[in-house]
Length: 109
Image: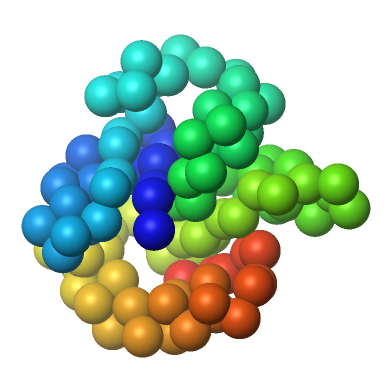
């Protein structure tokens, strides 16, 4: 699985996923730090990356019938990086299961 982490989330999340063997970029690393959501979606589609974001706008891209976009929508409030990574640890079995089942939008709360 390949991921791209959006701007509102720390680069530490991308590093966390890389340490677990996944191909993951932060938008900063991909040169997309100033990109519009549509540009990030095009990049994610072309690179077959799953978007990880707190931005609700990505839901509209993922819900389009013709879309191949997959989104991990982080619904946690502002929190420390350690709390974010702990939430991913706890949710990871469900995330993996949902992605394997073909779900296009997965919420992390």
